[in-house]
Image 1 (cartoon, one colour):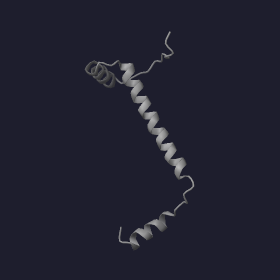
Image 2 (image 1 turned 180 degrees about the vertical axis):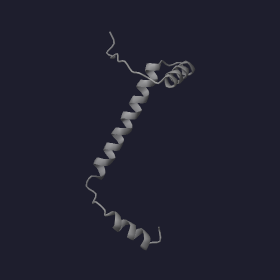
Image 3 (image 1 turned 120 degrees about the vertical axis):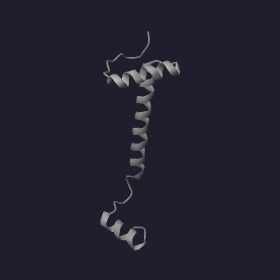
Length: 76
């Protein structure tokens, strides 16, 4: 038996229709499309968290100081 889990997800009618059409056009199941989308979303979150962790030790900058510096250098 498969180790996949069954869940109930409620889609807006238009979104469900679009998923069914895309599934038919790509020869994938709606489940495959949803799994891929969730994987991509979670991977993006993981990348964002890794970037935050990498930059955690960077010093905090005062917003007003940054604005003054940008104006001083003619960037604003």
